[in-house]
View 1 (tube, rainbow, N blue to C red):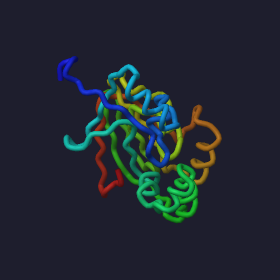
View 2: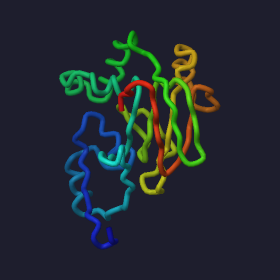
View 3: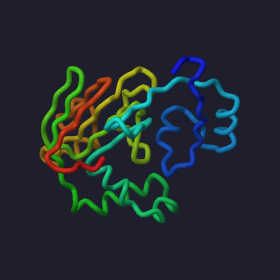
Length: 187
């Protein structure tokens, strides 16, 4: 689209966890968010596309976290908001299994077992979890973060303690990613 033909979109924090709104500084208070949508300055953001058909902003996720997000009961989300995902995830630890996959991007290649995959131009998902903390909404790049399935319990404990130099976290950046898996992955 040409610069003056690009539509402006106002975003209101009406979701369960409002991860995108939070990560880009949209106020939680609906009246303030509405004022910002009406009177604020429009900012260009990147829109990502999956399989040449579905578009997204913020984050596309795969693996255990996605299963939890889609399975968390609506009543629990309505009552507890973003915390409901953590509670439901803890209740479903018996289903924690990595998915084998291969991921390619510009100057990026990884193959292995992934517990959680996050690809985004937004920083957080799943109720405030900083899944792609280095992501920017308008730099033309997608950030990738993989939590590997190597040694599942130690991986979870070390991931909760620190991201720095964690061998169970793989990161990459690219304008595109291709994911191949021998079985259907929840995305």
